Image 1 (tube, helix red, strand yellow):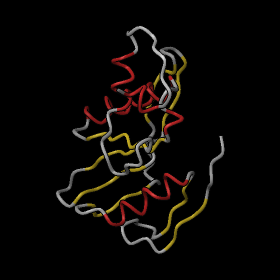
Image 2 (cartoon, helix red, strand yellow):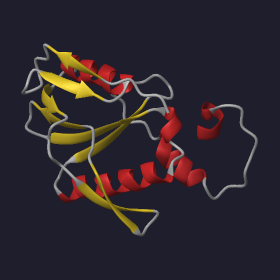
Image 3 (cartoon, helix red, strand yellow):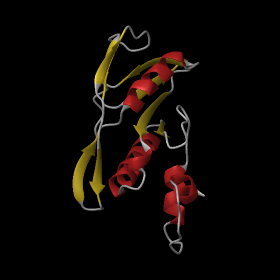
Image 4 (tube, helix red, strand yellow):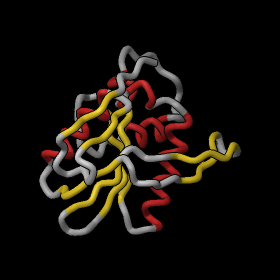
Length: 148
């Protein structure tokens, strides 16, 4: 898969004032966090590593994209993913582990996907995919059809 990497500078809500991005979705989300009401800071350099088991048995560590701090003192982990990653088993494994990790610490994990062009949204696409996994296969023409 093609991914465009780069660096944004002049950031007001990032402690270093600059940050690297690993995809255009990450870059766009950084800009969204810079403008979002209630966000006082965000960083990709948080040092958080969440243990998980890929496919239930291969030990791995997951580094979420962003640690976001809000004006009320609450903190959330945010992960950005393009639509192409939604069907990956590893994406589900990471998401479940991060959600559990956050709940144990009184935090929220937000999965931000762009299949519908929405940034800074708590989309439930993976939940729907998991819920529908037990259903009989059907013909679909698009990701939107799959998520119905």
